[in-house]
Length: 112
Length: 113
Image 1 (cartoon, one colour):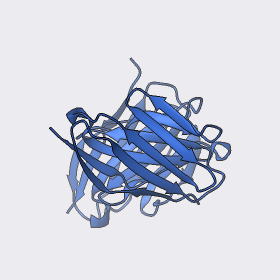
Image 2 (cartoon, one colour; image 1 turned 180 degrees about the vertical axis):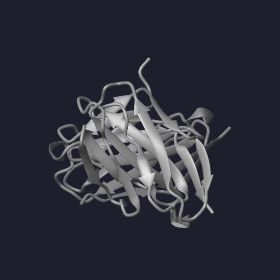
Image 3 (spheres, one colour; image 1 turned 180 degrees about the horizontal axis):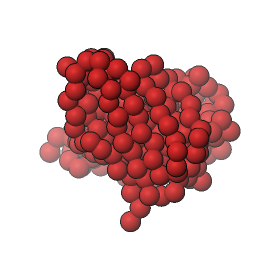
Image 4 (cartoon, helix red, strand yellow; image 1 turned 60 degrees about the vertical axis):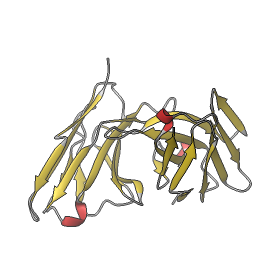
């Protein structure tokens, strides 16, 4: 079955370190998204991509970057982790035909 | 840009009662309104959606209503069961602007047995 997987599922890092969260989908979806989930804020869009070499900023993109070198992967990089980036991160994808977003299981990041 | 507000943030009901979650959106160009359910430790999953050319949609115990004029949409769960306990998110999307989806802050629903 097609799926979307995130890794690592849990990570603890220190302030100032670079961190990369991986997202891999096997649906061949062109559209991929990164959200962060924080209590009281719901899901906020960080970055998104509509295809290879396409990336766009979302609502809360400062301190994050993404790259899209193939259809399957959209890694999220925190260039210099800050405590404010402690959160649960979700990757999602959609074909766009139905509108449904398919989410990964999430990556819990703690920045000390 | 689009902004979605969701109320209440927490909702507690007795098993068998109904639950209603309400959302408002700001961008009149939004035309697709999905609802997602998130169980503990999992990613959100779509449970029902409605498009702007429809006023109401029902799927078994779940129904959504949309009032385009007032920019309101709601989720109704009837005959609630303990397994309905979860976090529910409403969202809005402008189809003509790509597939970017903006979510509300979520409602934590507790169904007491």
